[in-house]
Image 1 (cartoon, rainbow, N blue to C red):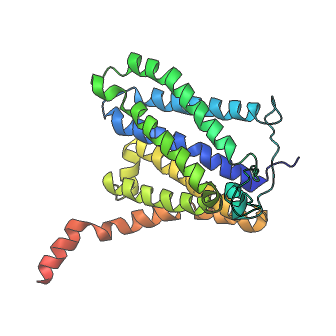
Image 2: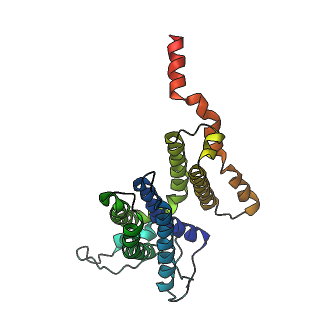
Image 3: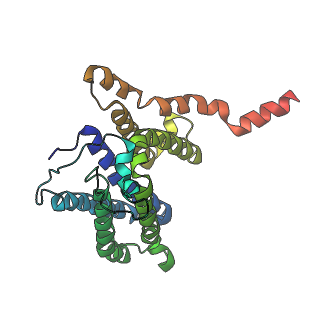
Length: 262
């Protein structure tokens, strides 16, 4: 009869974000530089995941309400009750265990199923109509990618759900830092001026800042607001550090200075 605490909701938010971020990544990856359809596909992916999340909450107990009932997570083994089925005679296993972390384990599978169904209903029609700039084989590649990553996410949740529950804040922080550094390096961003040249770079930067903030909030849980809120001031720090130090780590400069040294 309990309800999820703040950390439980943050975990569910993380699992809900995973397919959306992957959708956006593959749409961007396969859309091509000249394609004007990418933005509409991004919006559609957001719409699909949002509707899937709302429907998932509505079909969960109590049905028809966005509020859900849940059991409290006490330890890692709560996620893997199937490993604790009793064997009274040491021969026959009695399969009687239930989901001890209800609904944090199964609700994610329901959400992924709705995401997949909505994507298959909406996206092919949209892509066929608007993706004129792409070749026939390239049009549906972002959809094909989703058909690969949804099973992978499902297996990840089935096997590592409990580990993800405890590790996701640190996963968010590490991955968002690495991907931001890789993006800035690949886009040859070395100064604030380079960031302002294209709006897309600012969008990517602010998206990463939101992920940094989400990770920090998940770690601190905002239990003590006066202590935890100032931590959000650290959100721009990695990007600022990169911009300040990028010019000193330019490969061509290092090579030329090495040559002069010889």
